[in-house]
Amino acid sequence: MRRRYKEEYEILIERLSEKGLNVDAIKARLKALEIETPSWAYADSGTRFGIFYQPGAAVTIQEKLEDAAQVHKFTGIAPSVAVHVLWDFPDGKVDGVKEYAEQLGLRIGSVNPNVFQDQCYKYGSVASPDPEVRRRAVKHIIDSIEIAKQVGSNILSLWFADGTNHPGQDDFRRRKNRIVECLQEVYEAMPEDMTMLIEYKFFEPAFYHTDIADWGMAYVFAQKCGERAKVLVDLGHHPHGTNIEHVVAFLIDEGKLGGFHFNNRKYADDDLTTGSINPYELFLILKEIVAAEEEANFKVAFMVDQAANIKPKIEEMIQTIVNIQIAYAKALLIPRDKLFEAQERCDVVMAEQILQDAFNADVMPLIMTVREEMGVPLDPLMAYRQSGYQQRIERERGIRKGAGGLGA
Image 1: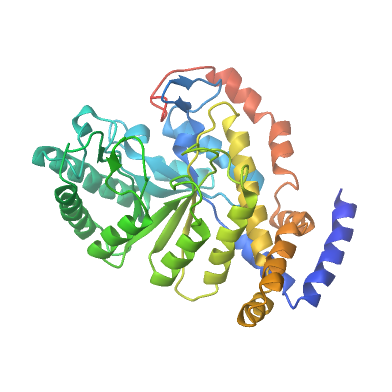
Image 2 (image 1 turned 90 degrees about the vertical axis):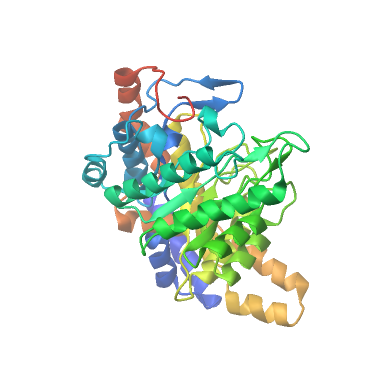
């Protein structure tokens, strides 16, 4: 396999050079790519109808970190782990977590408060008509900021299930103003190096309306908080047909794109394997990111948020990381000067063809070269399967019902 891909790599270098692309620069950007995996993806999950328990699924934060370390070990580009405060620190204690992550070659990434699963949030959290409920939600988020400081995180990731289920249940404008007031208080409590990410969802779990229903609403809330408040784009949180590439480009230009939750969907917020349903859409989104990364002040957090309900969890996460890596590599192959020239001439056919050529390119020789230079397996999934780790955790952990995440 090495001989074949090396021959193909030489051919690819020649083709890229003809397009004026610097292969060494492309390789450097592929090596610098970092994708955060979520702790809850290693725990049991399911649908609103029930949880599907898997042998070996993680329960404790230590087990989740151990599983995440396997993904990083075999891909080389997943060094951070997002944590969910109530699921990962149910007793509020974080002693030793940062140090254990570091022992495994990881770091703690974004910190996610939970203001949706407790019964008091039935009518909302930061939008609730009840001031005591709003106070409880804000306190939990500010407590989560303190946890972030302890584990070495500088990203506060916020998602709210707030909304109403029936017409007339509450006043939309009052709810909006309550959210602004609460978010501003949280923002003021953040340290200077912390970024607030505001996620949106156009429907579910509320059935009549959700309070932060789209990227525009999240943008307004971020604007009202300050420069370090930005929008988090979840690829599954849009109406069908939404041009996410356009949304991303708009937010980049406004300086308000803070991060991604990568996943894929067929019908609604399905949390399927990233790149499994519409890989061309993923490529077009990353096209905007790759272009913006060349700007001095642009930085965006790549984070995964999906649930392997029936797939083995570590294997699915490896698939996801590899799919993002492939799409990112293809986006790097776009000759931007030629694309811009075609756009300026209004040569619609050639502009699209340039994108199609990059998307259809076989980037595996390039990626395998990068993997070899980074000291990771050429085929991460097969290497993991042959490692014996999955068999060991299935044998040692078995099937358990516990506070692992969505299966809690």
